[in-house]
Amino acid sequence: MPIEDTRVERYMSREVETISPDVNLFDVANLFLKSKRRRFPVVEEDRIIGIVSQKDVLRTALMLKGFSWKHK
Image (cartoon, rainbow, N blue to C red; front, side):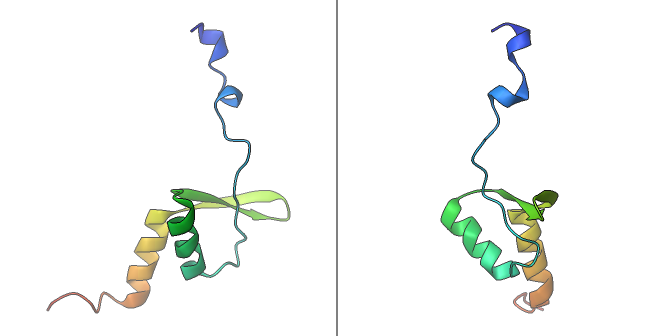
């Protein structure tokens, strides 16, 4: 493959699922389970303002839980 054919637009996803910044954390966790995606762009007023990953959601859920499930 010639190196000039390696532009990102040739390989990028065009149909991207996005979420709003005001979506509940646990609703996003459910979206991750249903879609099998690892990340969602966060969009507000047609602008990408961030990205949320499965790891972000898991980390935050554990912090909210207060790690009370751990043995002492």
